[in-house]
Image (cartoon, rainbow, N blue to C red; front, side, top):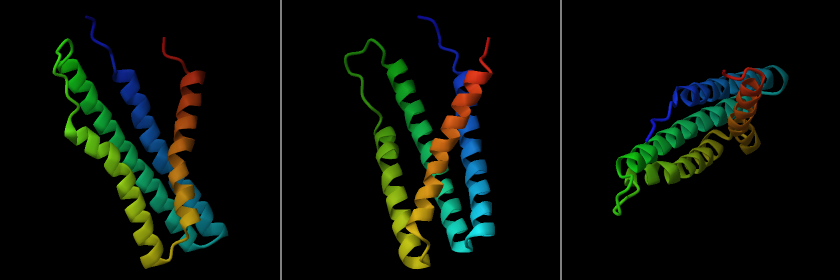
Length: 136
């Protein structure tokens, strides 16, 4: 069986992670200039939560890939519990953080949701980059 070269995919993952923070920071700066510091803080917080969630998902899926490769052909393949907890914990982390930040600091929920959208925007930008600059 031939080993898969994942270096290109890792580069795209790093690009998405970086763009999530850049887009979130740019949106927060815009919100601070044109709206309010609370709105900017919410956007930045949402972008940071999206970035952390992305890293947890990346780590969990890497663990699943290693486990599936190691147990290929085995009848006793198991999903690592750490991967399952990271995948489920991402949502608990986001929900808990948004609730605490909303109730304690009175940061608008809409701003945090907009910040969470930075991951989607970063994924779109990274995809467009890959389409415009295909690897040979």
